[in-house]
Image 1 (tube, helix red, strand yellow):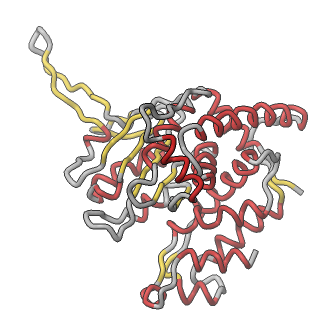
Image 2 (cartoon, rainbow, N blue to C red):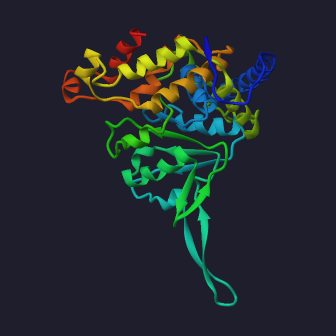
Image 3 (spheres, helix red, strand yellow):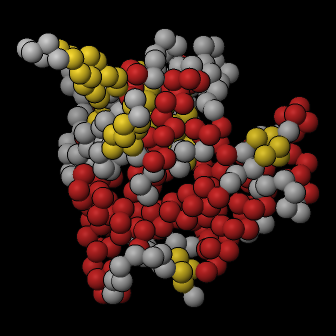
Length: 334
């Protein structure tokens, strides 16, 4: 048994045909990214899954792991209108959203005109987002959830598609501010970027220290990306996957009968985590060339979808327990 989302009906034949076209496009995207980003296949996969699912991603890692380069490359490859904002402690909300300025015409009449900020782009790169103050970080809340911003009581819609790819240095480093929980929940996934494998690093040494670096080329248009995102939302989801998502997310909440969770978790993920898993499992299935997600997709995406939506108790942190450890144990229960 499968569950279908409430979309206009599409026949199985048309679904297969659309999926084959999407697979060809995804293959070209992966090839285009691979010309510039060496190794890090897991990072590229998860970031692309987040974009294909229509969401935002938080890339976390120490400096020098090509987080910014990955975002720039995706913007070029996907044909998105991209803007970059370097988050600093003195950055103000108006530097992101825009502001109103007073103008005077030839007749002396004064009026306000809205000057849009860099958030009015299809892909916003929030570089080192945790360098800015919580006040400035929170300027993204409405945009990331509702896809519009309100300035002086007037609504301004954002372009479609709209994605935020934010990079973040580990909180242990000096000069960083933890992101508010409400904003973390807006990110579909948190993608942890680790050091590259030795072969990938060898290729980096050989191919990026010469006269010319590899450059990304455009392979897709924004309108086509929206079509693929719509196709993903139409993909059928087996009942077993729905049950696995519900079991996993609910078991991560204290007070739901899971002894390990009650012991280690202060607060757990809300329904937005279930929605994120539902979309991401579909996107991952299509990314792998399948027409429907499986429980294995839920297991593979549990950590990036849940880890930033949970907080451990003081006792758990004192024992050296991490959110990843808790999620790994919960995954075994599905």
